[in-house]
Length: 467
Image (cartoon, rainbow, N blue to C red; front, side, top):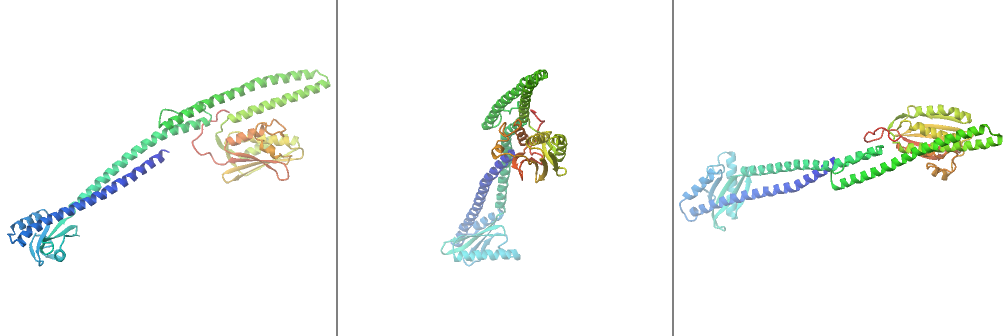
């Protein structure tokens, strides 16, 4: 975000500089050129006025020659022509003597200008060889008595224009550097508090409930965001700590009396007659069922409080291990349990989560199917995901039961506690995967796990919390 803010601000500064500096430079260049042309024409009109006293009034040419000498000392070239195009007086510079190729070209150019002004009286100017040549009629503008020509070097004007553009470029670069520093400072002023809130949110998501975002920095909106986040984090900490306290109380307050009650029933059943012993046995089964229900609630609670730290898990090895572990139970119930996965099939999950997921799924499947049925576990890599399927050919599930299967006690058809699939769903989704239920071809139920095959993107996570 800091980079985007800085780049946006710099782009605006560059755009403003271009829109301001370039038109200013062009305007100043045009003004300098106009001023140079006006100054040159004014100097030539002075020469023409002085020459008119000699050509029209037949006065002494001394004043005209002094003015031409002054023009020559200033670096200008000037000449006075009569109405016939003959040179009356001129400075000693190219364009008058006609010596050499360049001088001949200059002389021809001045002669052309003189002829043009005599035929069409009026001020005429041309640029030639980095010089501005101006021709002015002498005397009457209808029937001039001669022509005054002045040539002035444009190097000084060009130097001034170059210096002006250099100063403008220097000012633009300075403004750009100042804008860059200002944009970086602004971006950091806005971005640092946001990054702090983002880091605090990440740590809160990882289970660090006492984390808070630093306040009092950045714009008012960012400070208000940090304050709102801290209020939310404090409320979440209170709620989660309360939930964990309730779970701990349930664990201690329910399991202990259930264990004591089971022991008392065992003692009573030992000395009871057959009919009474049967009643005690039924009561013991209900107590065992209640104990499993409490254990399931505790398992769901632990799964909901746990935030996994993904590590590479060899899916094929885990499947083989769990098949071996459950094989005696499946054989006792006369159910075929098999597993087949691609070689070195790897997913990124929290340590121990895949084992718990498979154990819950296999336990549910073995409880649901009857003798002579089969349970198959198959895994394969599909693009950047791992698909793990556990299929059985038992009675399956109805559409309504599948829709409610992942909720606590949501499946009315469940033969167990109704918490196994809820635990599976929580563990899989916490690891960035998905789980769905499908019909098995030929009858039965297939649980499809879609697991990540690549490590999660973003900052590294802390240790697993809340488990």
